[in-house]
Image (cartoon, rainbow, N blue to C red; front, side):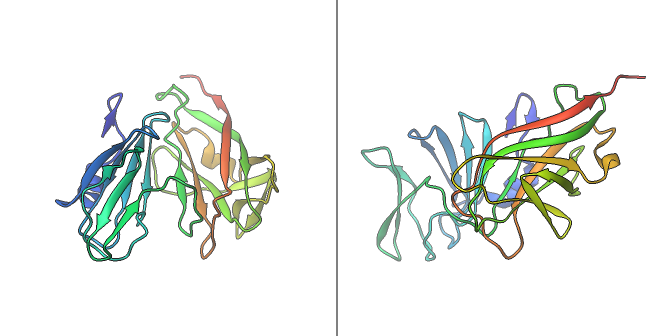
Length: 224
C-alpha cells in the first residue's frame, strides 16, 4: 500500500487483516475501494480507501450481521454494494451513513509541513468541528512517527477530563477548539506531528460529530 513512495499500511498489519476469504470491491457511488477481511467470519472488518481524500479508514464489524458465511460483494442496478448471508438467508446492503460508535479513532498522517529534514516547534492547534451533547471526543497528539500520546491544554472550545483535552458540545453549529501542548518541550524540536481523535473510555461518539478543518501553528527551525 504505497503512495508517493511512502507505505500507508504496514506489511504486518495487512498480513493480520487479510485472509484467504477476503474480497475487494470498488464503490463507484462514493469513489472508494473496499477490502473486506474475511467473508467466512462473524465479524467482518473493512478497510476503505477514498480516492477523493486519499485516505484509508478501518471499519470494525461493519456489515451488521453476527452470523457468518457471506458471498462475495456485488453491486446492484443502483450501484449499491450488497452481500448475501447464507445462514440468515438475507441480503445485506453496505451503508455509508454516519453512525454512533464506542471505539471511534481517527489519526491524521504524520505531518512534516513539507520539510521532513528540519525541526519544528508546534505552538497551537485550531480545530473547526461539530459535536453532539452526548459525544465524548478526546484530542491528543504524537510526534516523529512514535506511538506515545501527548496531551493538550484547551484554550477554548474544549475541556480537560483526566488530563486529556475533550471537545465540547456545539449545538447545531460549528465551533473552534484552540489547543496548545500542555508541555511545550514535548512538541518542540520535532520532525513530524500527528493528531489523534478518539472516544473517551466507556463512552460514545454520536453520528453528529464532524471535523471541518484543522490548522496547526508552528515555527520552522533553521539548520545549524
